[in-house]
Amino acid sequence: PVHTDAQGYVNTIASGDYEGGYIMARQPNPFASTCGQVCNAPCEEACRRGAIDEPISIRALKRTATDSHELRLGHAPGLSKLPSRTEAVAVIGSGPAGMSCAHDLARLGYQVTVFEASSEPGGMLTLGIPEYRLPRDIIEREINAILELGVELKCDQALGRDFSLSDLKSRGFQAVFLAVGAHRGKSMDIEGMDADGVVQGVDLLLNVSLGYRVWLGHRVVVVGGGDVAMDSARTALRLRVGSAESPAEYDAEYDAGQSEQYLAVDAAAIASRLGTKEVHIIYRRSRQEMPAHVTEVFEAEKEGIHFHLLTNPVRIEKDDRGRVLGLWCQKMRLGDPDSSGRRRPVPIEGSEFCMECDSVVLAIGQQADLSFIREEDRSAFGNIETTPYGTIKVDPETLATTAPGIFAGGDCAFGPRLLIDAEGDARRAATSIHRFLRGSANWEERVRFSAIQPRDVRDRYDA
Ligand SMILES: Cc1cc2nc3c(=O)[nH]c(=O)nc-3n(C[C@H](O)[C@H](O)[C@H](O)COP(=O)(O)OP(=O)(O)OC[C@H]3O[C@@H](n4cnc5c(N)ncnc54)[C@H](O)[C@@H]3O)c2cc1C
Ligand code: SF4
Image (cartoon, rainbow, N blue to C red; front, side, top):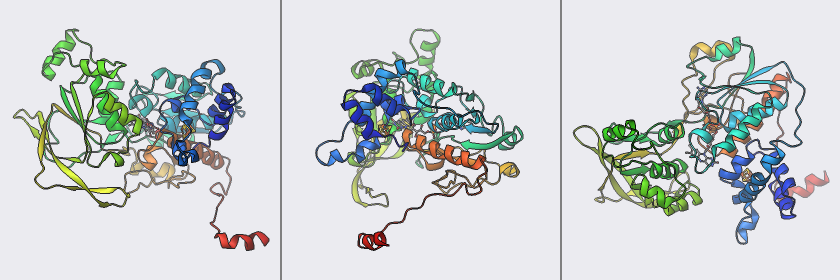
């Protein structure tokens, strides 16, 4: 997605030149070290060696090169920066989309300010992906290197809460890149959702990342089969509950300083002894359809997390004080493929059963909070249209929204995807913003390709 010359850096590393490999991997990607840790590596899926035996381990090679050379060679060896320009660009959100766009625009000489709602920059890299998978010093170094290009970062500044799009216009920003991600967890339409003990997976990870106390009890059921479900389940396993039997007791223990709020441990065996005793994941399709990366599923199983496949939640049982007692589920079987090409889960009549638990963690998807788009701001830039999927409507090539001067990318424009996709959007958006600000009348012009049938190739070639 960011046009990394994967073949080039693999060859360079293979020839023993790790430093050259590092430079090739780093130059197109301001989050190369982060990618070395957690990129889902779509390049490996495309690797043609996979047709023979296994794809080349491109991500692992990137990690080897970045681990060994980042600190010594610095962030961007050989990368140039153009002289300063007067135009100012506002970037909303400091996740990989926002920070990568800020990086590219700063290198083009623009005055870039990033506004971040949270107290910490990094988006889902800092607030979602648990620290045991992505060490925080790596993100910190990569963000600092972007700030060193002259990018200004303002944390605790939320668009829609602390300022509006009209304010940005009156403060002199000539273009805006919206990169607010998708942080609102999706809910389920089943009985008992209001029970005390029903938690959103993204909120759980965010709270743990920011160091807040979380009480999940001894037995937790996580609903979902994607990365959020895996991370929620594995994080739950790391939450130390001590001997407390209830939230009140837990608070008392915590306040008395007798137990730590939570304890992250390296080994899964130690985690399951110290943390939440049992974590179960229920997923309504089979393992083959699970969206989470195969390594994550493998590691979650190794840590002792129990998987219940072809199982769907139907109702949450609560006690007379409104606390979760259990999750009623129904077994499923796979039917015909649906519009996504995956086989549709079909309920098996009479197969209902109850899983006793203290908490239910929902990890079934996220959507963007676009409440900052307001009627009264239309006069500033224009009308920002949204899609029926709750994302910002953009031209997929230029990333322009329907309001001139406003661009959007990452999860808020395309729904939850991967870190490297967010970076790819940022790169295209920065190019479009540059062309827009240079006043090029045909800034939206693009190269168009048309498919030629093999039988026409000769005629067209001769012509
Ligand atoms: C639990 C979890 C695990 C994941 N694991 C992986 C993985 O292993 N590999 C992978 O490739 N991808 C993974 N992803 C996906 C990846 O993290 C996201 O696709 C990526 O972070 C999206 O980048 P973004 O910049 O669009 O949004 P985000 O990273 O979500 O950043 C958006 C930022 O905007 C801020 N913001 C929101 N609203 C406002 C506002 N109104 N004003 C100002 N700021 C605002 C937010 O606080 C946030 O900092 C994971 C995601 C999650 C949730
Ligand atoms: S897709 Fe990920 S692992 Fe593959 S080259 Fe790009 S950043 Fe590296």
